Image (tube, rainbow, N blue to C red; front, side, top):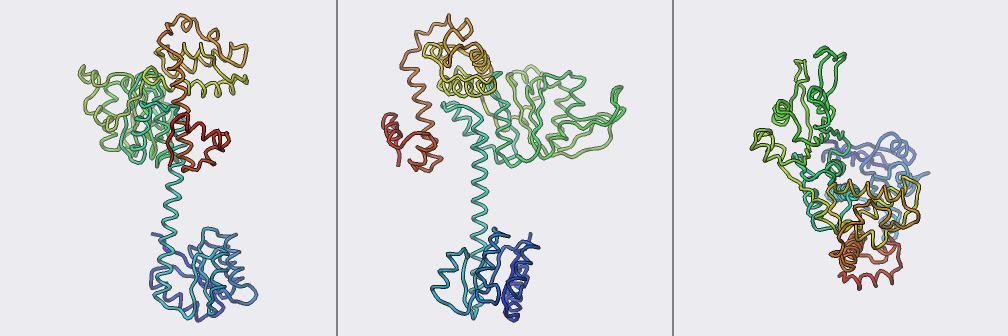
Length: 452
């Protein structure tokens, strides 16, 4: 463990020496400087956790030393020392940025306690900063997944719990529900975010090539192996391996994958070397793996190794409250990509999109929006910009109230989330929402949003 690095600055060498002895016995690494200029030079050469400086010194006093420290090493904490104790100098030092203040003659226990307390505070601040960064990163990662409906809230809840650990995850759901996006978000918000995220679709690569892709091969292992190849599992070392459509993995490779999970070891094709890897595996499937286990098409032991945590992605027809929000999102995305400004979708078109069952899920919705944006003659999408199948739908069951409820639900949840991010500060929330405070209060009343 790295020692706490302390710089003692005083023009009285005996004081520097006494403090060095005292603090070294406490296990700290202590350096001395006998004037302000020497202290600044030392700060430019190395970083100090704590700088203890006398206030009254010739040429450069303690306040100037602190000022330079704030420029050179803003993460350092400064303790002021003086034999001229007064309330005025203490207040001045604290206002200037000093972390604490001690007086001469020193009381050894007071010095020990002051430094110990300061280090504890620094540690707590760093932990809070890291936590805030992690929470911010998680929010950013989750922001890429659009949805406020109850089924999606359940997905977010599971994601929050699995992000910090290393457990393997199985994401299930129909094609187009966003399984890959969830996998990426979990990786980006977790402790492995700075490590590789490697993705492969197990059903998109011919079986004779898949083994080499996953495990790698040695030069000469087969006819076309002209050089050593690093496998995707090895490339994902310390990071995350996303195995999409895991149900399509051939049984002989299921055995090899199970071995990697159990032992954290693999051997490239045609090689004798055993490589050690540390990967978190996130698998996804639109198939019923348990049924495939019963049919002896998928190994039961591998299924349970992968299915430590299951995240079930709802079909779009099960979360229709999210459709207005998704439409708004993709109108912006597609409009930006195409350079075409589409601001809205009319009532009839929205009714039709709410009535549709979306067998292709979110992927189909995005494609529908892209087509509509291309064909639209105005800044508003109409029913005529949608495929013919939307014009033949029975939309009698989709009333004005259901559309209004969907839009109100989105608005209510969006305001609630903004208020939470603003820690209940309504002025800050109004600014983020782009409305004035009076409008926000009217919205809170209309949507029956309770606030503290």
